[in-house]
Length: 127
Picture 1 (spheres, rainbow, N blue to C red):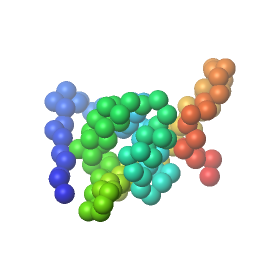
Picture 2 (picture 1 turned 180 degrees about the vertical axis):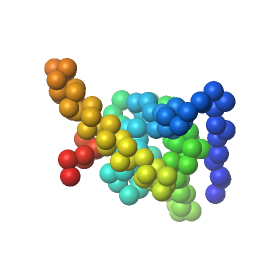
Picture 3 (picture 1 turned 45 degrees about the horizontal axis):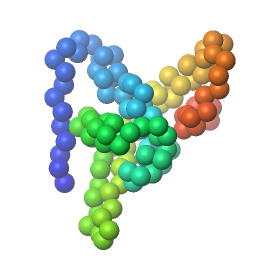
């Protein structure tokens, strides 16, 4: 199995910037949330959960998350071949942070926004 490792950006100056580089952004956080709701998923299952992401962006984002040690990719030598993605222990440790952000955002979004957030159903911060 290939070991993915990405170099840290030279311009990261503080821990917050590191965290946002790892799990910030629309797609990274959504992939982590989708995987947190499932033990493991195949690429097609992730794609289905992500709604409007393109294959190129999903593939690139999964690769980045693997390089950052957030997502693990396991290949099974079967016919047809099977590949599954799951969160690593480092990836699982991000979930409570994202749930806290979701809880904070939910309370203020309701005050400021008119629209319902219908796509995100994976952050269960109420339990």
